[in-house]
Length: 477
Ligand code: MSP
Image (cartoon, rainbow, N blue to C red; front, side, top):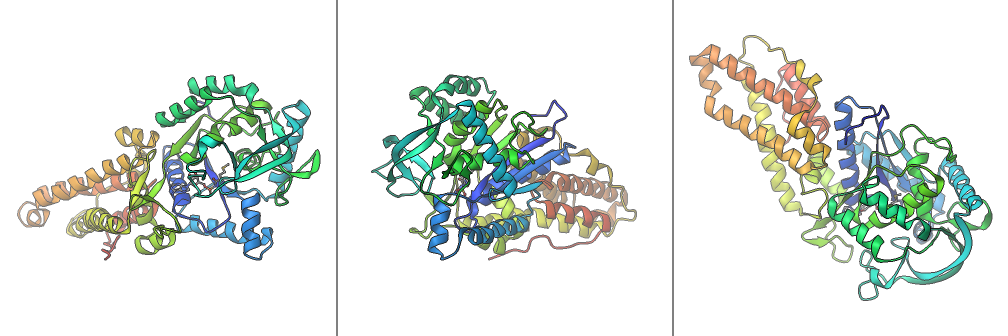
């Protein structure tokens, strides 16, 4: 996955709907993307890392109405909550895009006009079941007991005049791209799932406009209709780079090197999104990396079950780096992972307060007895190499953390075995040697931790320099 060209490494998260407060699922993708972005930067690569908010469509229009607010005011409030959460989680994005940004809207209109002029979009009508929660048309196969399984609600029946984008004509090309990994879908099981979907049925042309949704971008060639929210949203991945919608001049960062998405939005990302690009003659993204969902106590989080884990509560209890650690160590990034507050508290105490926190305070306390300060500057430039780099490059964040924690455990064991507090009295030379080794291990751990726990990494590096013990993680109940 290394860049061979000089193009900046471009990472995207989905843009999140602003129909409610940001939640743990949003945080999960964004923390993972931030970790990869920080890792790439540490390796000396130029990185463009984008995130943002998806602000149009029926779902948001309805929600604003329920709250008695106009949609513009409502979306401003929630977009601010996302920015605030990313600050608290120490997300170092390059740019935050909002689809209500006038420049984004103009670019979307330019694209639609071009697609209409080329015949890729044509006037027709659409009839089918529509799930407002997903903002997607559904077929019988997508439903369980007549309900959308993701939103546990019965989709609405819709029939309206609409503008459609041609899909059927692209199907063969799309399959070839996915099969050959020109459009790489990972992990493998999701690639297989998409290929079996694409080979199993004929792709229907898709409606890219809505007649009865006023909260959207008007079609430039028919102002009585607004742009379908997904067509609007996908283009963020280009407009975030400052693109004005001209297919002849695409920003240098494109194609995206990694687009992170959750499994529930894989199908649209592997069909409608590449279709728009293919119609425009623009390269499709290099990789769609699909992650699973966070479950709470083995179940899907839901209001009815009252089992949702609030991201604010996590931040309050575990702090920024504690939350980042617990999200990324929860399990394999491509699979569903299960969390409970109890288990996270145990893990926080074991790995952060006891494991890492203990190591740092022991080493620094002991190093007070060192006669000469050690030179510790070379590690910072070394970056992350070998096995750990490979794991992060393959999005195996939980294993990467395990790898780092093996080192932490070893270092703690090394202290127990070498007993430097005795050596300082009995064998000064040996003491210096043991401590040099420990301080070096700590400095390396600080570098390795940077993408995951940036604040902690900085604190450790500073503590080594200043030889000051500062508690990192206090035990919690
Ligand atoms: N606005 C669209 C995306 C448009 S991208 C061009 C959207 N937004 S969303 O806010 O509903 O969800 C965004 C992401 O959050 C998805 O990738 C989804 O998988 C993720 N998650 C939502 N709930 C989740 C969990 N419980 N666990 C992990 N991620 C989950 O879809």
